[in-house]
Length: 112
Image (cartoon, rainbow, N blue to C red):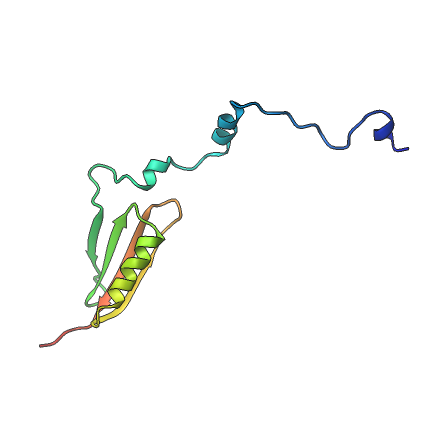
């Protein structure tokens, strides 16, 4: 017989049973992400939406929307595509832990 059966030795280490209070400890150990409210609450002194003209491309601009993600970015992009004078509309999230979207938009040059 194998030695682990005879002597009562188990090949797998025994795992500790965790009580009710240990759930919070385990969650705190695994969390190195920012607090959840930082995803939604705009800090004081920061604008929700800012506008920036593109200096390299004529009739192009960027809108930076703070504390939003893909849902609002895609909705805004689709609304901008409905404009018949829009040549380009797109958005991006700079980083998954930065809660802002950048929407780029370019319109046709209207000559009257």
